[in-house]
Image (tube, rainbow, N blue to C red):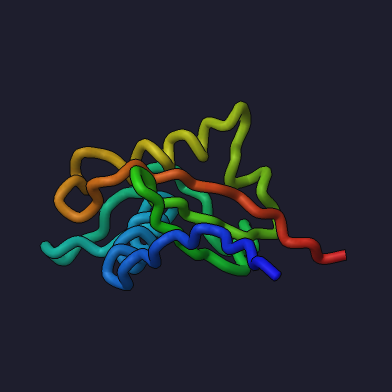
Length: 114
């Protein structure tokens, strides 16, 4: 008789998604600079080791949730959660304040292979 609808979060714009994905990659690997050189990675781990199968975003009232589905979540989390905490700090840092005004939450989903 009555249908219960969950509140859907707004979709994050394509520009913000591409921006966050490129900075996610530059956190772990070298990224090209406008001057022609390459920047040093914050943490030198090749992204291929994570086994990422999906990255999607949800836009909340005060946050942007970045859901990363991967095969090996322990590498992204790091010892004591250091890597994931540094990644969240990097993505919401002051250098990104012109494009991103909300807090970024990185959520990890383990893909079930077996």
